[in-house]
Amino acid sequence: MHQPLAADYAPGTRPDADTAVLLHGLGGWTHNWAALVDRLRPSVHCLALDLPGFGRSAPPPDGLVTVRRQASAVARHLDRTGHRRVHLVGNSLGALAALHLAAHRPELVATLTLISPALPALPPLRALRVALLALPGAPRLYARQQSARSPARQLDDLYGLIYADPSRVGAAQRATEQRERLRRAELPYASGMLAEGVRALVRAHLPLPAQASAWQQARLVTAPTLLVYGRDDRLVAFRTAARAYAAFRDARLLTLPDVGHVAMQERPDAVATAFRAMLAEPGRSARSSTPHPAARSV
Image (cartoon, rainbow, N blue to C red; front, side):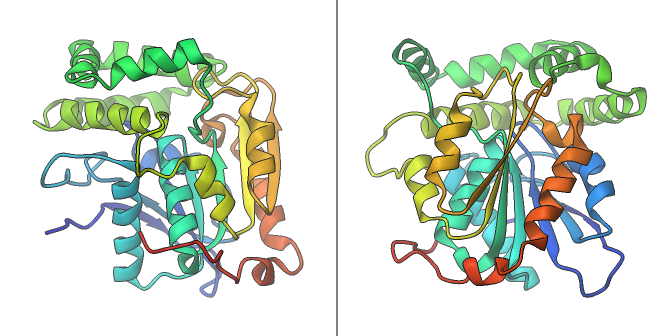
């Protein structure tokens, strides 16, 4: 039995507006989109989802997390709520889930926006280190090490990793995220879900049998696509931006200096402007209406 996803809905100013669906990254939650939602709401309704096992969404019954499963959970939510032709937006691990959904359920997606997508692009030595994370117990050990830190220390570590300049984090945002971390620390499955999320990212970066790579999926996407990269991203190599731009058949590329892994929090105005520009392009719907012949259901 699949549990419904927790969601935050912010209606746009026009009842007939399109809907943007927002998917957070590893260990994230709906609040990660608050700054961007404030700027998008005049144009679209905003539906931010907590992926299974994160935020307020229950974990999968078997405790397993994969990119495909995350995408399937989002597809079920959209099918159940009757959403079609949404503007799908994802960050990091959520961007991989959004990519999978756009590739395999094209009828659900009008446009695709990927912010620091965790596309595989590892040099051989680093690929070996990532492969070591796939060993039994390694992701869980990492999650336990993270959980052993205080919520305040966890936030310091996190901001230092995902922001180009952690001093930009406001007091209100920090207080909100610290309360969420304290809440999650009480959940018996929280560290396990973090471990599973790490494992899902590892699997996405390894050439496993019977698993279409994210780059292969990118070639299946027919929806207009906006790619957003921070030049100072410590998690996703900026050098992958050009390759990603070439991989999607209908791509736009926004690169932002002095921005890290979460452009929607660091530069929400710039991301919102590029998003609205894509929606305003003449003929946008016509370009995204024909599924790739290799696309198949999630």
